[in-house]
Length: 282
Length: 280
Image 1 (cartoon, each protein chain N blue to C red):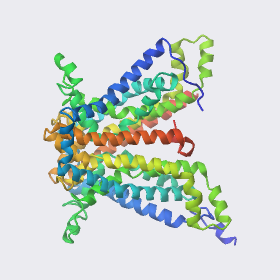
Image 2 (image 1 turned 120 degrees about the horizontal axis):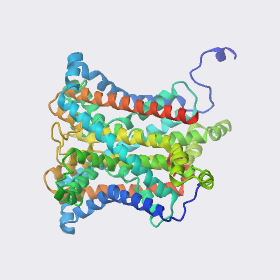
Image 3 (image 1 turned 90 degrees about the horizontal axis):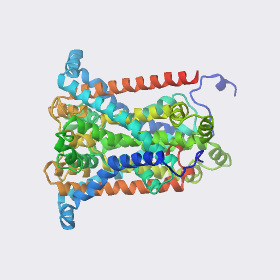
Image 4 (image 1 turned 120 degrees about the vertical axis):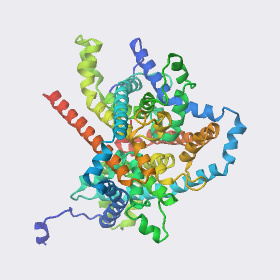
């Protein structure tokens, strides 16, 4: 029985049963639900050749929607990085009435259907709404403007930051901080030299999760955006508009363009994080 | 175990708490409260009126029917993927894990679009299927496929890290002692992962019932036929029928709250039996 051991093996032998059926079903289901549909997304834009693709993806209206989707996602995630850190800090470091309840409530945007959040936000921030009404006298419109898109994306992204940072803050050794304090480090210096370096990787992870979600977000944005061409149209809406004109190649082109840009952005963020962590170690 | 226990706040701490709590109230609690306020704005009887509409009832039924199939299928997939990935060593595992996560990074609209590209009137297989009298887009099947794609990784993502932590010792012992495959799975593996499975199913179900973007692309918005609850909310809202829109939305918000309570209970009660990512 020595011969089989010399052969190149793609799996380690095991006494456990069911490898074949389990992997078989996994691959079949994965292909059916994810891979084949994704292949259509990648293959379809080229129906009218390279020029047809370029024509769609450089259309001014498409570019305007991408600028809005990615710009608002970036701004919302940046705001959430700061506010999410404060929320996580309050939840982890202090004991106050209602802390556990609020901690559980952080996940609400994960559970609340986007259409529900969408109509609620549109109503709150409309000119006569609870918050929109406070800004209307100053001539500031929130709902039905790009500002509304930003507000909705802020509401969607918060839990990603909080949940990424929370475990790191919990594990962060209070003794290190106390030592820094005993050695005479001021509050700001402690935050800058002890806390921030430790949580930066988690913060970046949370930021990229929130960003990725915000870029493709549809339900919670569509009601508050106003959807004015060139002004407050988000990129996913452009896909729907192309589809409603039975332009499948156009819709697939916009979809593929969104995917490529967001993978590029995430790659950039991850590279940045890698460089930062290397610098930190030196 | 917490390295640093929560401290009694003082001075600057109250400012941090105030800002944090205020932000949570503004971005998360206020929208939730507004759903119920708007739904009951004209009283309980008008609220209940919304559920006498046959289209609303059809939407509720369709949402339940979609989740009833999408969730078990994805649970079955999660179990078999986790079994293959965590109990065996084989090449290409990393690639498989990456592929399973793809649906999380797709825009919901793209998750709907891909089915139209395949089965729509101008899709790859659409015209052929149409000749055979099979319609997928603008039917229950299309809505089901879009929902399955959106919720695809939920169960697998809960099970894989946990079963990785648990290793293969217990199953190997059972098999070595002569237990059959079915016996080993149901009496050794399943008890170890039951709560994690419940956790994954819970999150999968919440998303399946609440999905909007992907379903919106494939549904065609045929009232009483292909409108799920979230789509029905949109239809009512766009008709300026705000009370009815928020009434149906309040049901979905209730579902979210129940999900959140169950999730929190699972996290507190069974934190040792959930994947590390689910504990905090």
